[in-house]
Image (cartoon, rainbow over all chains, first blue to last red; front, side, top):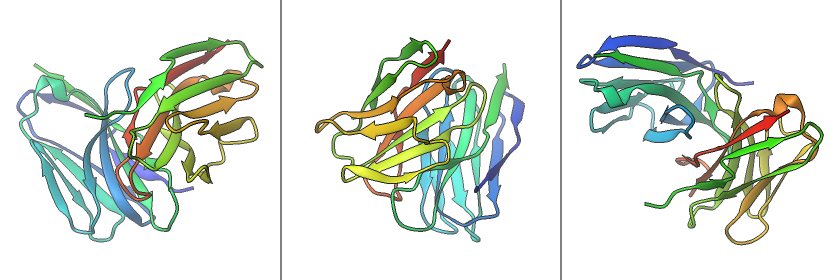
Length: 113
Length: 113
């Protein structure tokens, strides 16, 4: 099946630092989504990307849909304590139908005060 | 802001028993999904549902699983004879379009003993 390779697996940073994480795949995706998940809760949608090359921001978050449609990155600027959590990339593959999302394994963000 | 709701938040059941997990998707959404997340792992797609029928299902969604939209608001996942390995968080999600943003509920934690 399709897999998304997400890196890094975890990040230990200081408050105020910028963060960067990415996802790559051997398959093409039509849509890239980035979610944040807090312990015991459901994934919360952060950013959605629909076009190759698209760069989208949501506050301190910026994400890009790779030109090849096989990768995406998420940047968080000036991290704050509430940014702690697990960040997942997810892709919707090409083709019709109600495709399920393929998720990466997540990047665990830990912020040291 | 509209959100996906799920009940119960936690279900404990004995191996071999049937369970029904319930979801109320966002009201104007047309596509519905179930995902599961085993503790510490990534979110995995189970099934998608559109126009009162299954649109796509993964290898995980075997004959033990079924989905139903019994009325205009609820969307259910039934596991006929639970196994220990069915223990996981189960998330419902919904979207307006088949390639669009999927919004997740808070999840049901299923514990099979």
